[in-house]
Picture 1: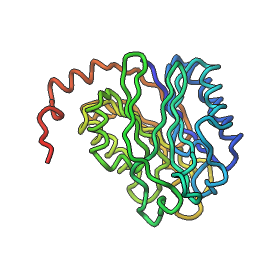
Picture 2: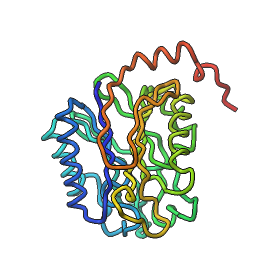
Picture 3: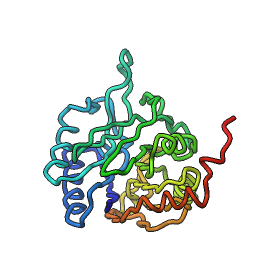
Picture 4: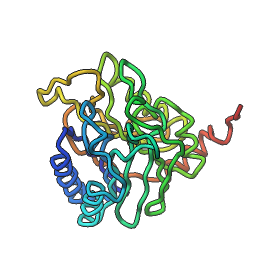
Length: 267
């Protein structure tokens, strides 16, 4: 299965961000991809208001993504914001939408980024349930940004059948942060013996844009990692499209040679 990681830099304007989805989805399809992954906050970049644009999964923004997926005959994974828990009018959920080719799924980010001077929980309600989906005989697990620091989500996805873990992020910048991102992607692949597709927002500074405040706006370095923790391919900080050909047989091979899931003890 050929996939693509769309490392984009989104802004405040929802229509402009949808334009990026349309453009990169078309480019992914032209390159032979059957599934394209966009980053967290594809709908609107962090550092902007979220409450005023949050909408349900059948709202206009998600419906437009769904239409793009149908037009291109491709599966799209993209980060958006949906309304928060009932009765909590002041918060949203940080949601991954999966749509296209007969697939419909969504995942609400479980681990909220309350670190490095940013408090995501001030504006976002946490999700509670891991999510996997199947496409073309392959099972995918979902994770968002800060989730990558928590191995149990990745091994739980593997227990639920995941051959591949998708991580969509808008990673916070700072000393050593890009190195941590790649280290964590490699570690989670090895923990779960899954392929890891880690797609982040591009680095705004690569385009001469200086981020304001503490909002995590991306560092780039989207990576594809093998079940043994080997980086198979990687982008730099600039926007770009990364293609990879996935072979689920490598997951079976890894789990035969290194059966960490079967050998582990649950305490």
